[in-house]
Image (cartoon, rainbow, N blue to C red; front, side, top):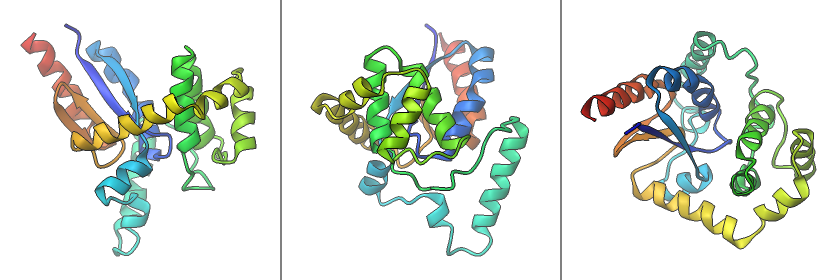
Length: 205
């Protein structure tokens, strides 16, 4: 059986962007499947008492600066030259995440995913502004009217809430988090361990 990497994902996290962009070589080497599980990072933070690194590290002398250094190293290692820190950060990702669930249900999930990643972390768009989000969706060749209508549906709202609550119940406290079988790995720095876990699962049959 082919192993699967489950990715607890929210557009709001720059580290989720980094991890997603760095995953393709791992998927190619291992043959693993990727299962993106859309969850609301704000909801995870609220449920666990966690905070974004940019906030949590701010009072600690040197730690924020080191976090930025690690980002520079990761960007250089994986040649993520298109990355730009969003000038509107933090951006509320609620409608974006609901829209992504709606897009998946409509069969256009990959195109919406790319639109959101590019808009947030390459083009610096304020995607919690309804008009900006609408323009980005249409600009990607998608139907903003139907996707934003889906984002407001009770079924999509419930799906995102359920995904988020289920992730917290499994021990998730932030994004990006990965699962290989029942093993949890947090952070883009754990991608090497994720690959090792996939290879171990393959070896175990």
